[in-house]
Amino acid sequence: MGEAETRQKLLRNVKKEVKQIMEEAVTRKFVHADSSHIISFCAVVEACVLHGLKRRIAGLLCSNKVAALFMKVAKSFSPAEELCRKVQELEQLIENSKQNNSSLSNDRSRLSKLPNLP
Image 1 (cartoon, one colour):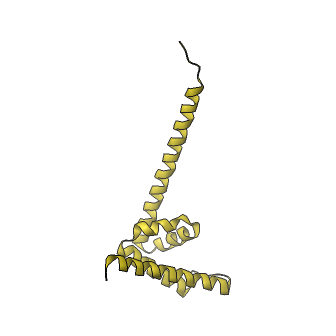
Image 2 (cartoon, helix red, strand yellow):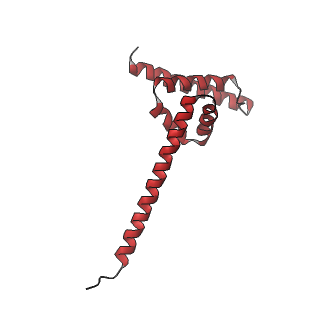
Image 3 (tube, helix red, strand yellow):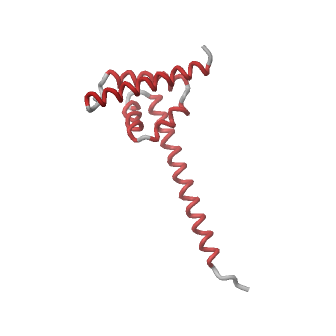
């Protein structure tokens, strides 16, 4: 099986497990952390992380619920812990970059308001 096919299969499995969790949430009104669907989802995510889809999975962490799930998994699974740490570092870098850009634009606007001296 080729690299692209393997990736597609792994992502298909993730989508399937997420769909099962959503169906359970609708039928039972909640999903317990020890649900077999959650455990299956964690196993599929583990397979993805071990396969090297870290960049693709990091995009999932935009959702607070998914981030919370990863944090919970990270307590007992070191690759997930490393992934969470890297995402937090990247978020911090992005935040710092935004703050620096904001302060630079404020400085420029203040400088443009100063009168021109001969």
